[in-house]
Structures are given as C-alpha cells and as structure tokens.
Image 1 (cartoon, one colour):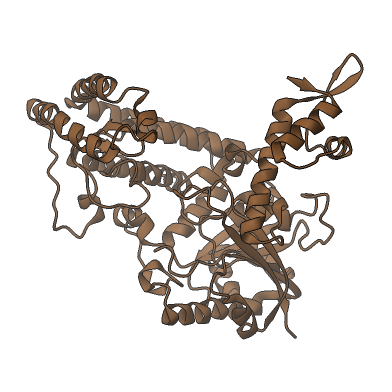
Image 2 (image 1 turned 90 degrees about the vertical axis):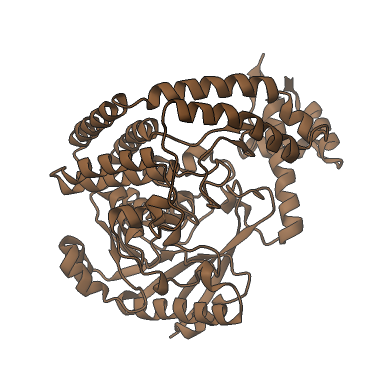
Length: 523
C-alpha cells in the first residue's frame, strides 16, 4: 500500500496518538529513514516502510523512558540484521558475552558513521584487547587494516581468536574435513543407529502431529492448556515407545553419574565414541593450522551434541538420555545419538565463513597471547610467539585499547567451554578469572573485581603510546569504573550509553544498556 505525504502524516499521527506533520515525514524521507517510490512523477511512501520506522521509533522512546534520554540509539545498530552482526568468522563458535563487530567498527574506523568526527585509530596502528574473549576486536581490526594484540587468561579463548584470523589453505582444509567425514560415515554405517533414529523420528513425528498440532502453542497462550502438566503427561506417554526401540536396537544410554570428566557426564556412549574417532583423525592431520581449524569445528559440534534439552543448551542442568517435552519447541524431542549431521553442517558453514572473511582480510597481523593481563610482558611474549607483530610493535607502540572486561559475577568463562578443555586437554586457570560467576556479586567480589581490572590497565599502560585512547565496554551497574580509572591512573573523558537489543536471553525484550567508557591518561 502506498501513501502520499498527507496520508502518511495522518497514519503516523493515529499510530503514535500525537501530531505528526507532513514536514516531519519529509524530514524522514530526506534523511533516508523511510523509503519512497515514484508513481506517475509523485513520491509515495510504502506503508510497510512507515510501519517499520515508527515501530522502531516507539521502541526507542520506550527504552529511553526506562533507561534515560542519554541513551545513544545510534549505537543500538538496530538496522543490522542478525546475519550482519554474526558475519563471517564471528559465528564460528558460540561464546557468551561477546559484543557485536559493528561496535568495534564504530570506534576503530574513521569512515563508519557520518556523524563521527573524532579519529582514534588509523590503518597501520596497533590496538590492544587485554580481555580478548572470542576475538571480535582482532577480526575487525584486520578488516580495517589495523594490527591487533589480544590477551586472555583462557587457553580456549586464545585458541578461538587465533583460529578466526589464521590464514588457511582452504582447499586442503576441505579435503581433510571430507576425509574425516568419510571415516565418520563409515563408522555410522556399520552400526544400527541410522535405522534406530529413523524409526524413532517417524514415531515422534506421528505422536507430535497428534498431540502437539500447530494450534498447540496458541492454545497454551490462550490459557486453554497447562503446558507444563500436559507436556509432562505426554512425555510419559511416549516413553514406552522410546524404551521399546532402545531395547530392540540395543542402544546404550547408560552414562556414569560419578565421573569428574565432562565428556563422560554429558555425552551418550555412542556420541562419545564418534567424538573420539573424529578427534583422533584430526590429530593425524599434518598441517598444524588446519588441525587447529578442524579442532574448532569439532568443538562447535560437540557443544551442540551434549545430552541435554534444547532449552538448556546454554545453561546445563542435568544429562538427558530419554525423549522429553521440549519447552523450546513445544513438542516431544529426543537426545542426539550421532554427531554426523552436526559435524557435516559445521564443516560446510565454517569453511564458507573463512572464505568470506578471506575476501575482506588485509595484510596486517593479529595475535592473541594466553596469559594474565595483570602481569604479562607483551613485548617479551610477542618476541617469543609472533615475531612479525613484535617488529611492528618495536617501531610503533600500541595506539590504544578496545575491550570488554568480564562483568561482575555473570559468567564462568572456563566452565562455559568445559567440553573443549576436557577433550583437547587445555590447561584451566579458573582461579585467575576476574569477576567470575562462582565468586558472586557481593562486596568482596566487587572489590576483587576493581583491583583485578585496574591492575590490567596499569600493566597495559606500559606498552601504550603516549597519547593513547582506551575504550571499555561495560554494564557498570555497580558504578565501579570511575574507581577503576582512578586506580589505573586514567580519567574518563566521555561515556556512550548504548542500548543492547536483540539479545539471546529469555528476557531479550527487557530494556538493557551498556556503557562505552572513553579513557585517557590522567597525567
């Protein structure tokens, strides 16, 4: 449906319940906020474009009512689709607590935003991320022609970050992945798992079609069905079919309850055996960089194949070895009995993402060092591990920092990837995490956090250029960063309050913000 200016202003006035003039609509057209089409020489406005803009406008106003008028909506990046905020290698592996690449681009790239006048980084500079996480800063620095150094206490985080920016022979990687897939398919074909899964899936489809039709979720929303009670009853009803098939095909679902090993606690025996097969094949790959890339794909695979419900994949509760009522999908679902489909899917997706990123890569260097940012000697470690980046550092000190420290008492960073630490034998340093979930959010935990983060910046200052800029992304609900800045010998010169939209948590629509603190030396 197409509207003229007068019709559009009337529609917007009715929608917002306040006066919107034709001049207001003209302004939106001029600045590209809404689309227009030519019709017999006249500019008309598509109703869906108008609806999209004002729906977002209402959301912005609601969030500002809740969080304050100082909310910088430009930094919401609300016009970006999910595929853009998880572009290429940014979705190589799940990771809790990472920021979107557009946020890094905004502060590192002088061409990102028409309203941005200050320039903090130039191509050829070095940026440091002392809480590197999954490597978002490193990846975006590469895209922008900026060298980058990361530091992380987690071996697995360094592993992810370096794998994202590594240069691979992608054809060889494809060949190696194909060989491993062939071996896995051969192993699966020798078992009865395919026939078992087919029979189980057919039975589930028939059962779900009868008891969980398309109208089920609507009836739950309307209060006609008690989802929890009904789901539990049907879960029990299907168990007889499941147990009969388990017995008929002699499927082993026994898992030890007293094992300290993550891999034994959270994977069905058949799945664990397939993981071991793939891992052993990867260990025999001669090319070290390709071996690491395949390990990353395997890690992503095994995260998806843990014996848990779909709703609890992010936060494990207890192992699930039977069919169950799935709160996420509103029907009876089953555990995984083979990793084959996930391994194939992630091999294809990962290689495609590396190919996409390769087209954008610049001839710059990025590297994440495993170590404690409070004490690490960056220059010495670079000399030992990344000589080319060390040479650049010797000529050109680090221009500044872009980072997001852990939030107080929110995530156990080692534990979220416990499966990878167990399978790959990475050393865990949980006790050196700053602000982990297991320490809580109490006064003692906050004091420890302030001390830890300030020590990081005090140490990193030694390696920064004289007129450095530091950008810190944080949800500072306890107002800790003024103290952190003071202890670190820095001063906060600006703050950007950013709305965080499209979160993956269950309360994703709740108004939530984080602050980007801009710090400089206090000298």
